[in-house]
Image 1: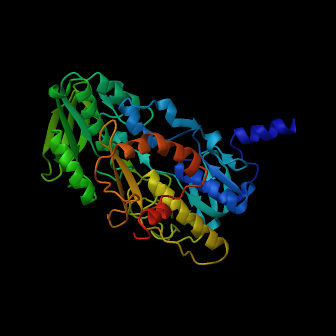
Image 2: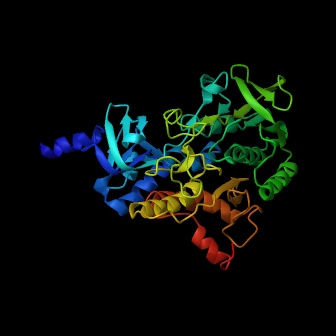
Image 3: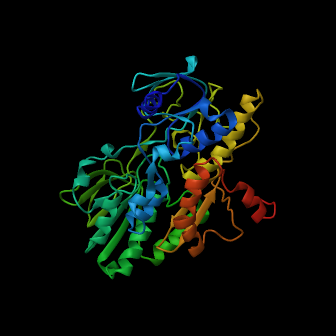
Length: 426
């Protein structure tokens, strides 16, 4: 009976106690890796993780799911299976922060206190900020690789393409994996060539940004691919409406306020606007834009010394990717270790992030860069060149590294290997 009650308490999300040395908020890649690292620091019984979802997804693979190269089933595992053994799982949403009293309130009415708080809440998708969505996804010919609910719709739209415009969009907000919206364009181009439909397709990528990619070295390489494959890029174009019943998309021209343009489409891939978690906005932990306000070097909160942040929910001025999370986790691990010993943090995060830009079903440009947008490449080759080896690393090796390295708190990014590969030079 006692074992049954204990199991019920765990499953129902009611933690066995209300105070933890380290409380982790969020069960995505950031939260799980930090829970694993903190378990080794302070013991599993002193760590809890707050996460409502039953399933944990490896989201980077959804680019390939949307192109029919991987199954959506391969991207998910049960949350229970990835939470480090012995760490308490509080199956709830965070409802309120009270950092002055070292307390977090959950939506189930529970109050949990902590000595140290790690905020890893990710970001939120806002399809509803585009008129006509999300209800437009009930129609065919429209998909989005950013949600498990819509990623297979991308593949359905692509494989059923006949002729006309294939539209790909980028939102006028911060995004996670800024390369993903154009990766599916390159894959769609490759698929249509493979199936003999490319001559009937007009491929269009509309982005509100003033450039194709933020780092010049890789942007130059991508522009060459764009020209070679006859892809149409419209900069400063922002999606504001989808009329899925008519197969029309409406864009605003950011350089000519008030001017809009309607595009007919045979398929459209929508990247949604994104923003910080609603619970963070207006709390005492956020910056003016609603993101967690942390020191960009140490990941420690700028106001509360026992609060830390990692991943997409933070205001770190770098691209929001799983690769960034890996590098941040190594720094944050060191920062927390120093704080636990009443010492000053001494390890600095350089903004390292990576984006494997999938350019076909067997090639990748592996973009790696820092806070300053300077390439920070791991391998002693020119990574702006399309590579088959890098494709297999993206498609086959990185998922293994994610499940068995990052989520176990064992992978802190390629920094040490980069030093070896470049013989000690940056």
